[in-house]
Amino acid sequence: MATGGLVQRKEMTFFVGIAFADGSCLSGRMTGTLINAAAIVAGGIFGRVAIRQLSNERQVLIKHLLGVFTVYAGLSLTWNGLNGSWRQVGRQLLIVVAAMMIGKSLGRLLRLQRGFNRLGQFARRSFEQAGQGGGCPNPGFVTCAILFCAEPLAALGAVQDGLTGSYQPLVLKAIMDGLATVVFARTFGWGAVLSAVPVLAYQGTLTLLVRQLEPWLRQGSLVDGITATNGLLIFCVALVILELKKVDLADYLPSLAIAPLLTWWLR
Image 1 (spheres, rainbow, N blue to C red):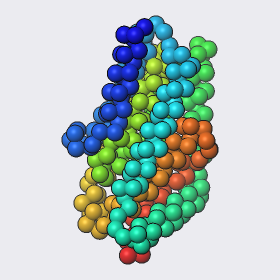
Image 2 (cartoon, rainbow, N blue to C red):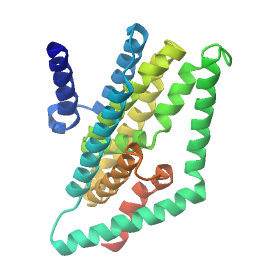
Image 3 (tube, rainbow, N blue to C red):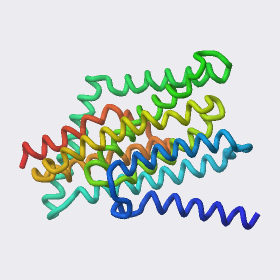
Image 4 (cartoon, one colour):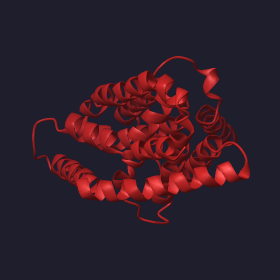
């Protein structure tokens, strides 16, 4: 028992250390997405070979730890995005709040959250049909790909990874996706593991596109506004994880485009 407890503590220390290490420790492109895809593969393999599942107590503990770490990651990004004097910081905060308000209105107009909800409902029905032995022969690939790519944290993390090289949000997503794949692999088989491919393609493409825009955004002093806004949105992810408040995260995604526009317009 003592040896098992020591191993669990070492594993938790390892995951926490990765999640909040300095981004300079792992150089290169798409670092967060590569970690995310690897976690899905590892979770799927573990789900196929493991005999016992995680107890409910451990699942609740992991959820709470992820929520706390997400709070830290989000607020850290926001803090890093606020620079200058107190007057300048106050002005930047107003821009962030205005960007989130305008972004939410635009997201509702585009019905982004409704679209994400429909994808989630489709995935849930596929999971239920697979558990009953019905549905298409192997729905695991499509179902897991939809779930992992439709998470707002996928876009938020990929943007931040491409913008500043900060991959902590995607590491948090990797842990959540890896744990989910442990369960999905038992129901869907190896199709759940293959969902790492579209995750790699979607998040990696988004990261590389943002990385191409990063020099222009930095030259125009627009990076900080995006980072601060993204940090607050990731903080909202923590509210959802901890079940403190229901937030329509997808509706806020346009805020990442509104923030630099407001910064450029008001400077």
